[in-house]
Length: 150
Image 1 (cartoon, rainbow, N blue to C red):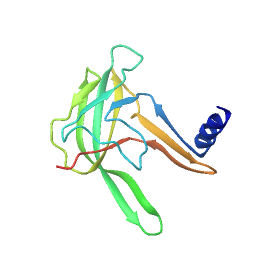
Image 2 (image 1 turned 90 degrees about the vertical axis):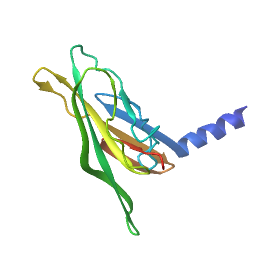
Image 3 (image 1 turned 180 degrees about the vertical axis):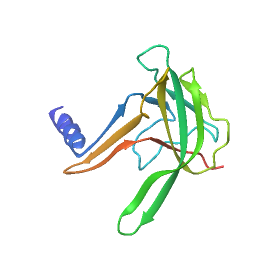
Image 4 (image 1 turned 180 degrees about the horizontal axis):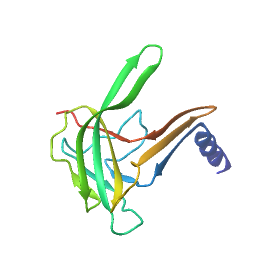
C-alpha cells in the first residue's frame, strides 16, 4: 500500500494541471488544457456558464475565430482572431449560437455580466500544467474549444 501511495504521489508531482476562472465559470463547451481544446457537441453549440452571484443581471456572449500558427522554433502559438458572433442582454445562463461554425476549427468564447449601466470585464481563465520541474502557463484567455469534423 505504501508503494502504491508513493507512485501516486510521484505521478502527481510530475504531472499536475490547474485551471482557475475569473468572474464567471464556463460549463459547456468544457474548458481544459488550451493546447488540446475540448470538442463541442456540434457546429452550433449551446454555450453554458454558471450564474453570477448577484441578481438582476443579463449576460453578453462573444465568439472569436481561433488562430493557430505553427513554427519550427516556437512551436504552436494560439491567439484570438476576429469576432464572429455577439449576443447582448441574455437573461439565461445558456445560449445556442444562431450560426453554424466551421468544422474542425478552434474558437474562443467568453461572457460578461451587465446590470443597468454597469458592465463587467469579459470572463477569462488561467491554465497551468506542471511537468516535473518545468511548467506551461496560459493566462487571462477566453475559453477555447474546437468544432467537430464534418
